[in-house]
Image (cartoon, rainbow, N blue to C red; front, top):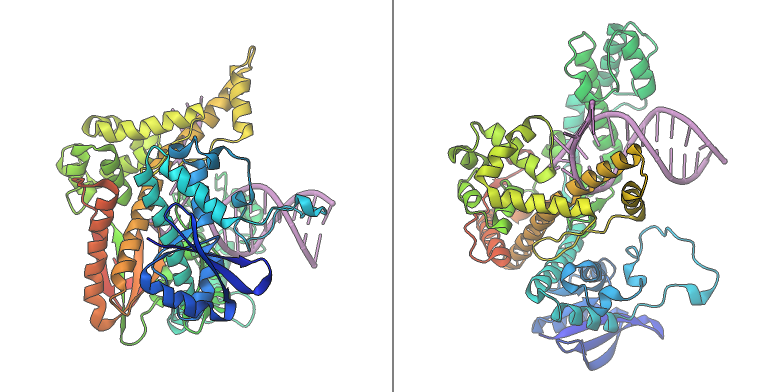
Length: 547
DNA sequence: ACCGTCGGCGCC
DNA sequence: AAAGGGCGCCGACGGT
């Protein structure tokens, strides 16, 4: 496959350099392209199905999209650097062992955390893309698992393309529907002050507590007020208040719910984030240590169920919404090779499969036990069920337990494809050292144990959450390729869920493509695993109609 | 006026 | 004795 590297022209801001490279990154040909002609050049070259190599997809690709050009494949040097440098599979490589470079820095365009030095020679060196690519390719080729790393780098890079494309097209959003929802729940949009229903609830709470001046938006004020009225609470949080049976409870919970809606996704949010019928969050691939995406701005990963009715397909279009059912348990079953758990996962509802296998009595128990195993619950109903889970699914439980033990020791762990957890920081190591030193105090020992357990829960979850993120990336990449045959766009992605905006007469075909892509993702990652990756797929007019 | 931290809560 | 992973965002708060 041809690699085409795009980089800045050191001599001109109006031009870029395009280098043709071999699979190993050796230079074949160089040409200079005027920025004004770049989109057309990329469009022409795309016919050969090259892999475009560049420093940063979020920097290079948006302009191409604006010009109406899409590319099939890329290699995002910044994202791939982060993976390769840390991966246990490429530990011995030059790239992993070398000093920190500008490639380890934050995303360009992100807020600059460090002050720029006054001395030019101390500034980060200009990024040498060709050299970096060769180091990455060499590190992967010499690694313990070149196949897995290659798949991971390709998936991560395609994720970067998809994120840029999603940022480009936006989520179809009906301001009218959003306003109807807000008006229904809160009362009409006020010119100033609080919406009527919110104010009425606040008044109700103040009356029930017999405190006419209470400011509900101040935690301190509210905590004092609750205590003065006889509520024995430690905080003002929902989980603590909800079980108390007093007149103020119900209106207070209702107030909290609505106040949250207003501040997070109210009219101000709508004015800020929705323009010309599209919500444009800034998707950040690789933004989470586990490999999940993050978003910056708009809170796109937390769209509350109550306003999902505002996500509406255009006239004549549909939303194809699909989510993977119990993705993390299925991923755990596949990566641990636990055949009993995989058998439970052949049920469309894995939790019901666990019940049918006789491990627990109810679906609710199955769910809490499974999530407890993945998150590291050590108390409560979840912990009580752990012995039964261990007996029923020994290999799956052993995998997460091993990851937890590794974290407790301060070791790193890796996902199925080799994304590797960060090492604990200096404070963590210091605490561990202090506890094992001669004459360590009981407090030191306790503190170190707690840190150890905390980090163990992180690494336990890392291997499963991170591998689930890899499955999801492969799913999306496969789906994106299949969507080339349609006039349809991926518009939203949420960990284990995708949304495609599709012409109505293509929606069923798109739904089928979504299912085929899930099958392909399972095989790409795990070969002929017995685990089924079940989906819920819905073709709807608005997001609230899914599920 | 601005900035960082924290409680609280939305999503998976 | 207590012991649930990963995020982003908002307003309040306390400091300067």
